[in-house]
Image: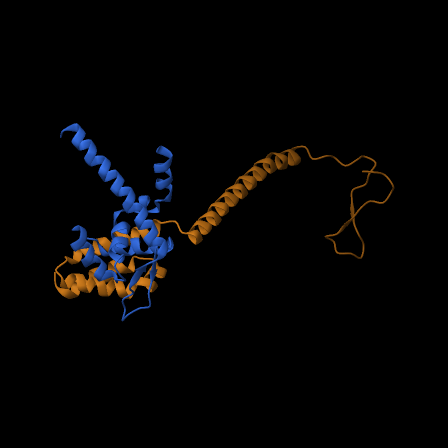
Length: 134
Length: 113
């Protein structure tokens, strides 16, 4: 493998690390790889070692990542609770709506139907005022 | 006897850090080194080829445990040094290995193998 290809392969492997790791060790790791290549270590073996290291780095739990994992878990629980509550509400509302349309209570025979108020917006309906509870 | 060895096991924080971390601490015991020097030294010391990915993982772990510390960079290289708790942990671990090694040799003798 020519040198530029080997360097590209290793650079790609190094880019697999989290940004925090790259800021901390990136330059030194690239230089170390160059020295190891010069010693005759195969580029593929260096790249593979860095890839395995990157995987470990992503999978190792850290306090901050543990917190964000907890936040994600809480969010998932909250979302699933919200979904189940809304599904239940929708399920309970559907038969009630069906029942209300099927058996709508008839107006009391002595109670006149509500009349739109004069001088008001036609959308506003005034309560009948005759002292009877309709 | 059992409680004594249990106590030693409790103090031996290097029991679960892996071979690479122990080899790094042994290599740093005689003075600070950077990554490349560590890899070369460990190859000579134990005939173990430490991959660069393994090296940085172990260095980060040891630093988090307070067993090593990073020194100011020389060029782009960061040398590491062993800390006092790191030296104490290494001593405890090597003592433990010596006890196990002696017990193993004795059993081989007793078994006549």
